[in-house]
Length: 108
Image 1 (cartoon, rainbow, N blue to C red):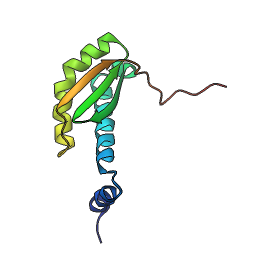
Image 2 (image 1 turned 45 degrees about the vertical axis):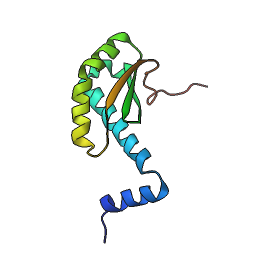
Image 3 (image 1 turned 90 degrees about the vertical axis):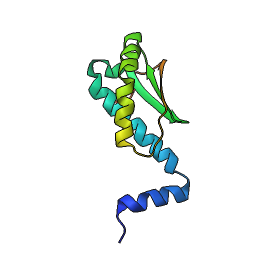
């Protein structure tokens, strides 16, 4: 019997979802790493996408963007270790909306 670890990639490839699943994994791991590396700025930093080997991070504050720029090489090293076989050539920091929407409760 095949293990889930060997079956899941086959199924995702068959359905055309493998690249999307890899990108989602990279985004999730990068967000976790940034929350641990920059805990005081976590509400101002959101990892958005991995597209064409470029990881895009949105920062709602200029200080958060500056701090992200400084830790970007360490983030790339971490992702290279954890996500073997997934190319990440660049980390792009953008100013924009990055507030944490996961914990907000809508009113009304």
